[in-house]
Length: 311
Image 1 (tube, one colour):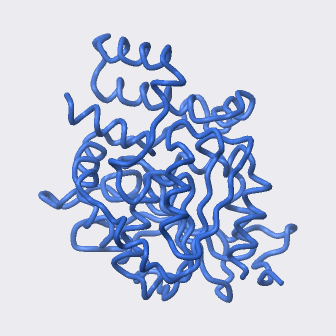
Image 2 (image 1 turned 60 degrees about the vertical axis):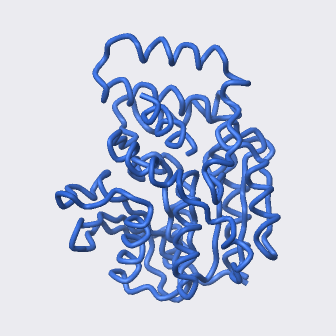
């Protein structure tokens, strides 16, 4: 039970431009595909086709989530008019199922998958954006493969050491936390309870209630967040033992740290510490956002990200 609670907490812990690949009057190229590896076929989704600009590879949060929770935002398609934007599903989630029997569910395995994806897509240098838990995975990848890093974006990232994250849910939402504990004891199936709990937690990730409601409308009443509790528990248990903080001082590529000022899931102190630890890192606070500034302040977020990527 303690491990499951830890896994859930980590799950909730869960930036002159090149010529556009397509004008706003044209359809944006969109592709779904698979990259084969011995342990899993990695499902990916790509928007845009401009090979002249550095590609943006987005690493979603979780662990144990697909990239589906990012898709209610229009920002990714807007960014893809300048460059290729690639999403993928981490092993055991979304389109990256099934996984070979006995294959590990570890952070190291996810780093290997990310590099297999990069190779399979024929990408040499990449701009890597890690959102929430995806920030830890992006840091782990950058530590292992700095030769492929053009730039790094850490968006409300789950630190370089999960044990140092500052969560404020209990302090800010004691009523919601109490309801969650009661719901967990209500007798629902583990899968149904986990999915319901995740949606409840997502409702706490927004600064604006209007933006929160708009997000869920776009996600849809039956929209999935792509949760796989077993994957979440296994990866969380492994990731919680890792500490990449000593690696940060060696990051020689441009790094942008982004955070919502009112992120209760990963308090801005985490972003500030990352900025302080990475040489030359820039930081931007989004003053009307919680954990998802890419949705709540999409226009500002896109402008900041495009300026950084174009340098």
